[in-house]
Image 1 (spheres, rainbow, N blue to C red):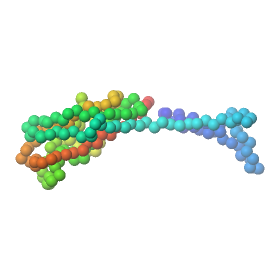
Image 2 (image 1 turned 90 degrees about the vertical axis):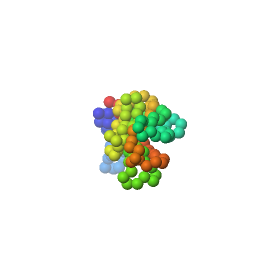
Image 3 (image 1 turned 180 degrees about the vertical axis):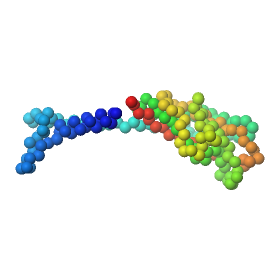
Image 4 (image 1 turned 120 degrees about the vertical axis):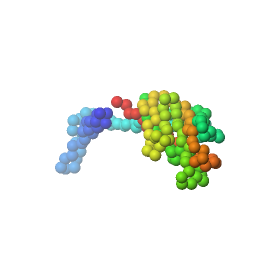
Length: 179
């Protein structure tokens, strides 16, 4: 609707600025005479501000779960995701690189350690939501930050190789447009 109104306004402005061309090549000025009055001509300037969001983490951009426990979850410290938008609301989506904690030297058949990313009632589960690309995490979010916590899930320690494990979570912040 806003784009249609902007387009209609643009057409009106452009039509009021349109010039009449004659066969002799001389310019007679505007057709309706509104934009010029003698030696003063007005130029209407039109612009649009794009809806935009940015995000960043406070401090370092990682959490360390430390040594994992195969039988109970290990929880990270909270990490603040700051959200900057020029709209009232934003959609926050998450996807992960590995969809689970993997080791550099894991082989085919080795299991990953699954985990959950949470912030209050918002949740991304690598088992349920992984392998699907970006998944909605916080729909129509109105705040300026999310406190992100990562929790490992219990795992079969016989199937998960020892060593350092890692994954990367990508947070995508998209503005929710005004209506």
